[in-house]
Image (tube, rainbow, N blue to C red; front, side, top):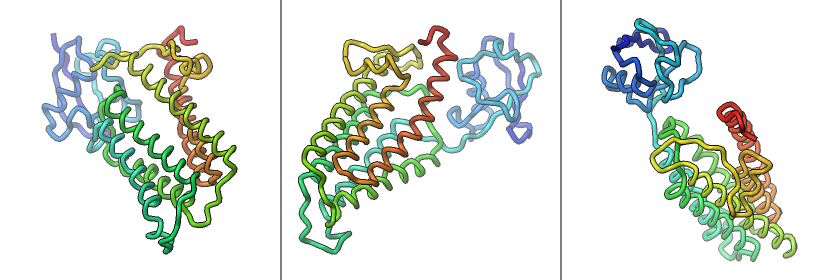
Amino acid sequence: MGVELNIFTVKNASLCTISVETTATIKDIKKEIAKSQKSLRVERQSIRSDIKGKDIDDNATIKSLGLENGSTVYVKDLGAQIGWRTVYLIEYLGPPIVYAIFAARPGIFYNNTEISMSMTAYIAFGCWTVHYLKRLYESAFIHRFSHGTMPLRNLFKNCGYYWGFAGYVAAHVNHPLFTSPSMLQVAIGTAIFAISELGNLSIHLLLRDLRPAGSSVRKIPVPNSNPLTKLYNYVSCPNYTYEFTAWLGFSILTSCIPALIFALAGMYQMTVWALNKHKAYKKEFKDYP
């Protein structure tokens, strides 16, 4: 037995009428809309129960939403989309290249061809490069995404953030007037950075193992045998914690204000993400610690 649904845009314009089974999900509704409206591919659609409502999860069923024959649902066009894996690869490829240009050819920017990098600048260059190579590796081989795409327009904003900060930090660390802090401070900062990078990688590996390949399964993340994952006993998103402490370590080893600004900007955004993730965990898992 089928159910006929009226599809409207979020501007309250009639779009089409579709028929789906009573067991259908929101994902099935999207597929039917895509058949009727060729420009509205599945990944471009956001389905809502009312014009100003929130996006409904793809796995929600018609029955659970109380939709009946003749009910109306609203679709928003999210615009051109790009795969998350591609997004990350583009975002993270730029920063090491931008930083390397400042490190390898400082004369281009400072009109001084006899600039020699300090040991601290070399270490900073190595740390920066290692971080983004790790990010590229994780994006290609470790991360598993519950959402396949994001709006293409966001790519330019994200690249502007990562690539712009790469130039901002590199311009200061590789400047002719850059003064290295003490080697003890450099050693402490480098150690914090290295441990944090390993911790961040450990969390990403743990999260990968929670989700079987090709699925969107969600489980409560708990520490495994790796001691660096024990941070899960205290916070919901230790990958963000390690990300911040890595850049804090980088800021200590370089004693560079732009690097600290980058670390604080990242901490602010990751705090927002972490609070939302914690709230989602509490809502989804009734026994979440």
